[in-house]
Image (tube, rainbow over all chains, first blue to last red; front, side, top):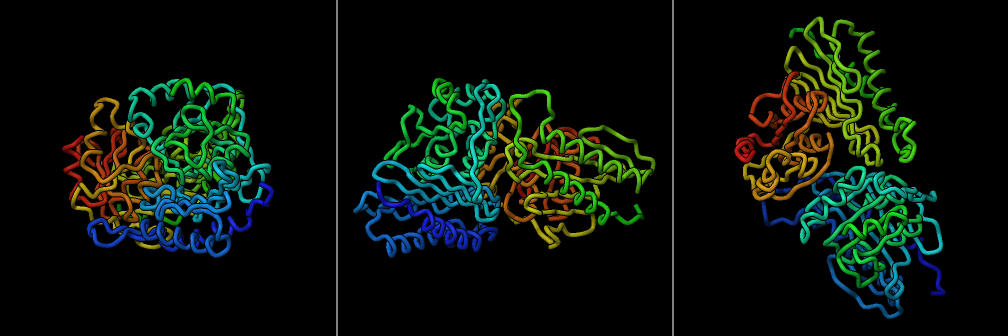
Length: 254
Length: 254
């Protein structure tokens, strides 16, 4: 990697996504008709197609992996990873904790990530070799060496207990309290020093690539449930800790 | 009840609460030191004390029931019911779904309610005889006569399953999908037509009085788990449905 990381370009992608998301956000969800696409489906597809078009025009050799339209193979080792609307349930109820995730990998490794919340106009940027920023200002995860003080976040109890009904209970027994269904916004709040641990499962590649540089460049540790790095071909599990000192403790509980 | 409902005064209370909440929101939570009060504790107390002072000065005969400082008996049948920070966990992680709840009862009956989210600057006002408003515009719950289409909200699975482990599973089996831990903001989203049913337990009086006029004056139905009206001396359970047609169906599942 000798080329500069295209952070300004990635921010342009996030700006473009935000314009589209704001257009559909808060649109009534027709819950009776099955014929029309939902607002979130429309927003998802329109954002991803628009970002793909821009990337293909500006960086034609880069690969693209998106939630909606699959994989374009990379010719130069760089791959953009896009989740147009992370937190679709929140989007459908008009709760502004969803976000657009834009990640960039060099070969297998995530090197750039953006979480953009276009209603609150909150944006986190993480890139290798630079401190994570929140709305332009450097931020850090907080210290939390004692797991009993940790605020723990997850989608829901069932999301992480599907193949081990006691897993959530083990987490809850040793942590301070649990917060639920924060979507990608939870990872931003971890980078800002407000959440200490997050565990999730059933994630697609597009759900986590952008999160890796954001958490790592804010001082946290983010791996799968075996403790392995999250890469372009990682599994569906994720464990993030703001203070690396409690990461092993959580791995033991998994 | 011949006096006019003091809606303008109630909005002044909400403005005052919002100024204080914004002052403490996003303050780092010192998770090591036990000596200092947390930001949410400071905000809670300061908001309630300030609103109590204003009410006692302007309407000295009105009663006051607050989460932090207890009950002042009413001399005229009117009682203000205040939850300075509803959604304290969200407040501690800097997620803007908490809110200040301001309710007014005439004798037992809720007649005015405000949900105020001071970071997003979102405000719902419900009062008897008027359509509920969201940021000044009239709003309505949506129709959802078929429970299989209902988006269901709750704090967490365990919040409503504590004395019946299958209760949450019964709800989840018949509804479209579940959204979690939306705090008072969920009830605003129901009034705006985005959530169809909400069930909660372990609520204090201050947690629900303001919600009653907001849901009812948007066309929804809100009761306890026996189907009884929520009043100044109600129990800790709550069931709200945007479309009254599915309310009985949920009562059967409880």
